[in-house]
Length: 500
Image (cartoon, rainbow, N blue to C red; front, side, top):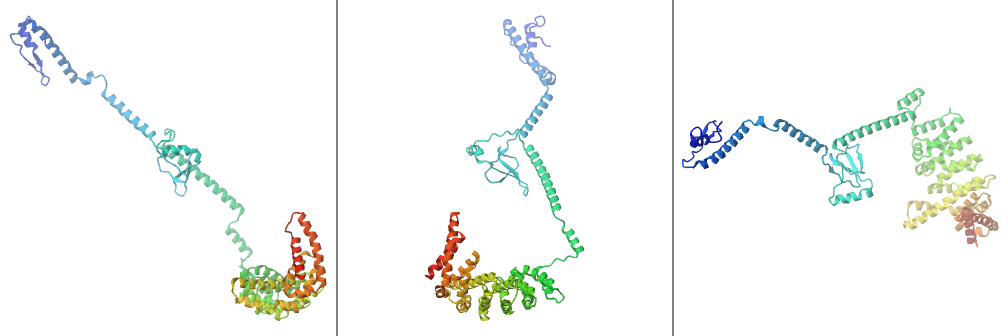
């Protein structure tokens, strides 16, 4: 250690100043002389200068020691401080990850795909598209989110608590939602399969049972062929033939089946059945033909060429059961309607005379109404064909030319149908009277003079007018302004007006 003051015992002031003027070399640890005090300074000023210099040296010495022994004299531990700082940084990073700011999704009224990391506003409608696997979002109620959407448009941000739903929470919830959907779908599928198994049997099991029973599934064509063969077989009994015809009538109602019957020759077999000596065979053969002729021009043409019209008229002209004549008349009506060529042949073969004889027979009122209805249909067909030609300004269509060759009205007048029709007005049924009134109106142009000269017709019309006037009044009281009896009354009033 070096003295901090003057050593007056050894060397005097100069010697003490000389010692005090030395300093410590920090690099090599040697003391070097800083300066030498001048010899001319007085002793009174040397003492304070020495003390100041000593304090300076002590300060320098203390500073050097603190630099060399930093680890021993430090107030904090650097290693512990570094560890705490690292932990603080990791904690801050984790907090930032957990509370990341999610991008806000702006839903509309249409379904839109939701990208990962986007936040959905509360109350939005979210679904999982099972085809694409993407989540889709849209607005659920417009009023509920109107203010929020306005705020978003103005640049405001929705108040979303990111600590409540993080991205991991959303992923976990989505995974659970998929699992729940799969479980629910599997349960519904199993329940549906169980219900189907309970209601229906497997096709393999049905085929096996059909094979065991020797059941063969046939088409309509195959069935009709089998029925025709059964009817045409000489080994079949009368009951079997009638059953075959009865079943065949069900199939030929369809236009395609009727044409198929024609294609393999079955139609001619049935037409030939009209020549049978059994009235039941005639009846059911006519029943099949009537069903096959209905609105089927191809079959109608083949029937005319096959002689069906002549055979039907023969049955009507001969003595047959009433049930057989009903079926034959049905077949005749089906053959003549909308077929002007058949109507020409009908007039040539004396069809009007045959029908007149049929109407004049006793206990044939039912047939009379059907005959009158047929005549009305034939007259109005020709009238409609002429009106259609006038509207289309086509004066020479083939159909109109065929109808012009059908001279039905003159034939009706010559065969006395004006008088026959007028007398049928005495039938008691309202439906029969309606059809007779319609036919009288259709024949008015041809039979006007005869109607005016028939006093019985005038009395009948007046009587019916009073009857239906009372019935129409009852209908009106019951609240039916356009009732059935009022229509009949209108037809009677029209005829009376024309005949005056």
